[in-house]
Length: 245
Length: 269
Image (cartoon, rainbow over all chains, first blue to last red; front, side, top):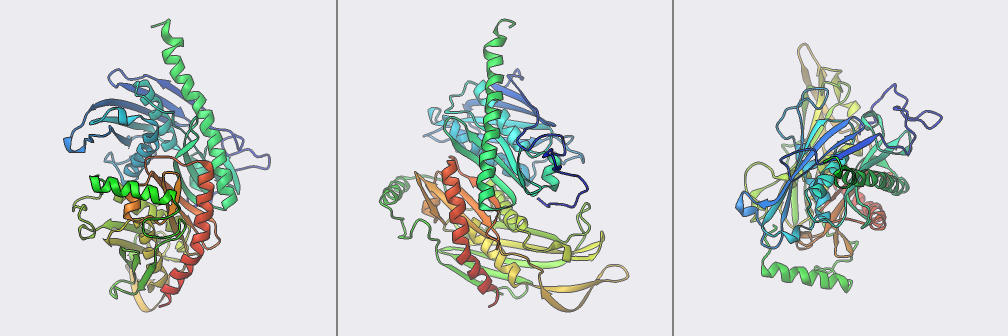
């Protein structure tokens, strides 16, 4: 969060942001469940300009074998950006950033998945960022959660994610790319809406203790909006869509 | 560090039992960190250095300061990079080879805490705009492991940066030329990282390795000298409630004051 000098007006006097949104308004979000033939579960999300595919395989046998756990199944997660997903071509090899994001997404999903029912197996979650915009880890987590549900894997709750942040000394919902570059703080949040647990939380940027609390509350409101869209995606595949199939 | 044996299971249930009775396995209070011992200037060949013991976790950090090319989009800023490595002599389970995801996360979280606090004023580290800048590299190595490397590495890097002496360069005919004299690094604030573990329904500050192995979730909150929060990382395979997170924020701000004084005092050794 450089808070880099910019000519852009991030928040005008009417409380309108650089992309025309109000401070509590998320970007447009659409999710489709079951978009891949081979994966046991899958989802495609468009979250602002993010375009992300998530595919789930498992529970299945683990390779390498030594990773297997006799008491529980394990979760593996790969967050990967395509070379063409960003302005400058990205090296296709996993970067340290992608490895860290893979880990935090895995840990955000783990509390929701009933892995203990499938000892000695693995559930693999593959997330491919086809086009990246600000907040790609939250969008990736949203898609992964729908893909896990689509795979029929028993879950305690969905995991819904949305970022909040600080722009022009104001707490706003769902930071976009410009706000991420030029704003003051970015806080991605992952949340289980029925169990009321925060399973992903990161922050970069400076804020007071009061702003911190306000920022989490704002992010949770965003997560609840996303949750409705996730449910709708699953309803569309498993109920409304039945007649045409 | 995640191979569970019968002994580990017994230890884990004992830790839970003690916490339910309001006690920790090593006798500390829930919001009490272990003793912090800092020796700055431990590595004279580095421009700044610190050897930090946080209980029985020990980290050595060396700061090297040298001219470098700026990043293409920010030619008016110097470079700060902080790394962390877990050495094989630090614990029987650590192996040589490329860093695993936990070590990568550790290095990135320690770097982020210091970077996001804007501790070093990078705009003062320009030798020639867009051509040559000063690079500050803080490399942490963990030599002994007893949990909570996040805070130990953060304290080591911060102390090493605070105590570092920066050489002077002027841009000559075809590159930076070393001058006489040196100065402190231009610092604006002292970031302090406070890591807390959630074990059952309890939250404890600065978990040792026994607590680390049986925690449900953890959170690292870094605050600056204004008592503002500048970086957060949640980890572990479980979640926090909003109330727990608010309490963690307050604890991090409160605990950081004394630690910040310790870091500042150590830099003046």
